[in-house]
Image 1: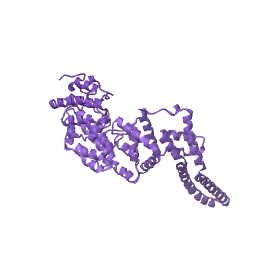
Image 2: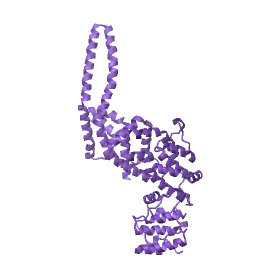
Image 3: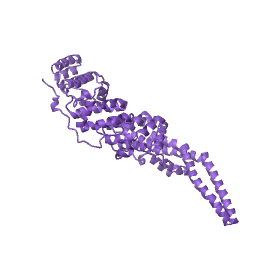
Image 4: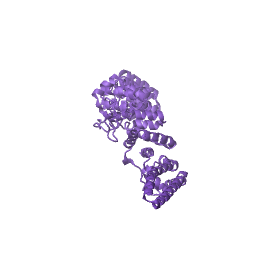
Length: 473
C-alpha cells in the first residue's frame, strides 16, 4: 500500500534495550520512548489519505476507510497506528483510540514497540489496567522488550492500587513458564512480589518459588541487601523478614495511605512514578503532620529494622545529589522565620513547671546531703562513710532523672515546633538541632541532643526534604 511520512514498522524499531543493571529499579523502563506529539499532521500518518481526512476533521470517513483496510489487511501494524493517530486527533482526551489498541493487541498485531510514541505513558497505563490487558494477550508480541514494557506499565499501576490483583497476574502458568527463559521478565515478576509482600506475605511466599526464589522462614537465613539496593530479589527477601513488624504497625497504628504506598514501592517503581509518590507523600505530610508523627513514633519504637528500611527507601528514591539550596543561601527573612519559633520553644521549655520542680528538688537534695555531710564530718569518719553511702546512690538516681525531665520538656515544648518546621519547610532535622545547639537560649542548647536523637522526627525530616526535591525536578 502507498504510505506517507511514517516508516513501516520494520524500519522504525526502537533502540535496543540497555544491558541489565542489577541495581536498576524493577519498574524502570528499559527503553527511552519519545513524547507523543501535541497534535498529528498529515505527514505523521502512514496512509497520507487518512492524515488529510483527519486534518480536515472528516473523522467519520477516515474511520470507514480504516475499517475497510483493516478488514483486508488485519495484520498491518501501521493501519492500527494510523487509527490511533486519527482518534487522538478527533479527541485527544477521548478513549476511542483504546478500542483500536485492544483490537490490535488481541489479534497479535505487532504494535507494542510503537504505540508509546502516540500515547502518553499515563494514558497507556490506564488503558492496560481498565481494559484488563494481561499476559495472555500481550505474549503475542514478538518483541520481548515491548512485551515487558507494556506489562511494566500495567503492573506498576496495579501495585499502587491493589496488590492483590497484581498477585493474581503472577499466578498465570504461562507467565511463570516465560519467566524461566527471560531474566528481565523474572525481574519484573519479583518486583511485583516485593511490592505486594507487606499486603499478603503468605501468598507471596507461595508464589515466589515459581520464579526461582524461596523465601527464608527465619531471619538468619535471608540475605540483607546493600543500603539503597533496588535489586528486587534482595528487597523481596528483606521485606518478607519485616512482614511481622509491618503487620503490627498497620494493626496498632493508623498508617496514612501515601506513607504505606511509598514504604512498599519506593525502591521498585520507575523514577517518574516514585517522584509522584514523594510529591503525594510530602503534600499529605504537610496536611496532617501529627498523624505522620504518631506513625513514625510507632515505627521507631517497635521496629528499628523497619525504620531503617524506610530510611533507605527515602535515600534510594532521592539521592543526595538532588539536594536543594544550602542554609547559607537563605535570606534574612527566611532565617528569622526559622529562628523565631525555635526561640519561642526554648522560652516555653524554660518556663515549663517540670524544669522548675526539678531545680527545686535538686537544690533541696544537694542542700540536705551537704548538711548531712558537714554534720558527719564533725561527728567522725564512721558517720561520714554512712552519709557517702546515701549520697552516691542519690547522685546515681538524680542524673538519669534529670535526663528524663529534659526529655519530657523537649516533647512538651519543642518537638511540635520542630515538626512544623520539618513538615512545612522541608528542613533537615540535623540543621535544626545545630541551630538549637548554638542558640543563645541555654535551655534550647540543653535540649538539642534530644532533637538530634529523635528518630521519628528524623525519618519525617528525610521524607519532607525528599518531597521538596522531587517537586524541583
